[in-house]
Image 1: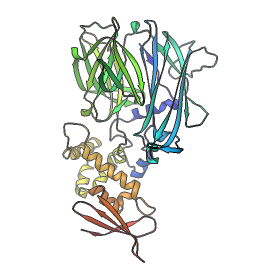
Image 2 (image 1 turned 135 degrees about the horizontal axis):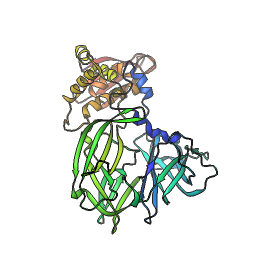
Image 3 (image 1 turned 90 degrees about the vertical axis):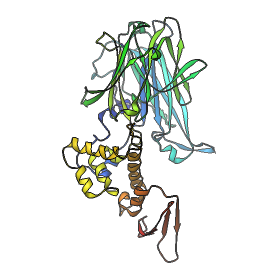
Image 4 (image 1 turned 60 degrees about the horizontal axis):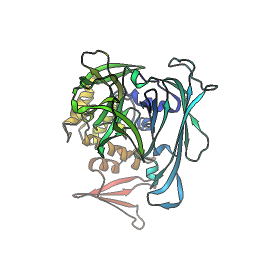
Length: 467
């Protein structure tokens, strides 16, 4: 079994997401929207570590794939801007692997000084952005891979990061891995796959490359290595929602199970990793007497936003043939949804005070249930977990906070903020500057118009007319 231990320092960012159990569980208690907004900083570097079959039966490929969001990178404006290349940011990463002398406990400090370096890998590329707004985005990112060939054994390794043109390397703490040959593995790996395509008769599996995260509300695939399996073996797949308690994960409930069918099996294949721009893929190459895998589609669009354990078990066996933990991640989750009380209070723009009082009564579980039922009754796609209407409503609150907040008003409490939350972005905005009078801003929608007049020199506008 491949053991890839948890790591801290730079790479500990990927563990932060496992601290939250569900969309409404963060910071429950009395907290303001502004406090949530200051905390709502998602990670922007993602690393995955796994192994693949090596070039020989006695070797293993140790692979790291990574994604770095644009809002982490230090961009500079180009001297000769081209289309889609107004800004640029070089990025370099390297990995060095050392032969370990002794096995360490998870909390022990791991050193590499004086150890024999057995392998190195490096990667370098440049991220380009077409606008300043894109340089601040976590939807745009640059990704890549590094892999080294290792004989079975015990190793220490380190990563180094060079963002921008800074020559100073940011080094992660040394970590330890233990790898066995594929013929000696007892428990297989589970790799998360974003999409599957067939090219020239070969399956190309686009890796999620998201640090054991998957996109909330979207289905994905699991590529499961089944060590020691026979072509006629029968397997079951189960997914359990987990509850995180400090360093322990406790099985909470099984939310999905299925039998792996013959169509899911990929027998006698050898995955080969490929990098094409921002896309990191595995190509399943047929090879006699190679390795057996299962490729299973996971209906994640029906799962709540939480943490899960996926396990594949051979019929008649108690020990899983393969297992892994993954987390559904909502990119740019609206700030209000980080706290149930804040999310409920923000309903004030569309429901009565009595309805808010009703939702806020009872125990924590009862309040959450009533909140979910409120939005479920308005869900335009009730067969999926993702509620587009709820997400849009709370995104408008975030927009109002970011664009209409002044030294005098919080954005969502301003007249412009309230209109934006209720009706969304206007079809047209016209600003006028009457002689000797305050500025006027006119918002036009399909069937209505709102007129706002400036009340200060700091961006405050008051609603003075609606048609």
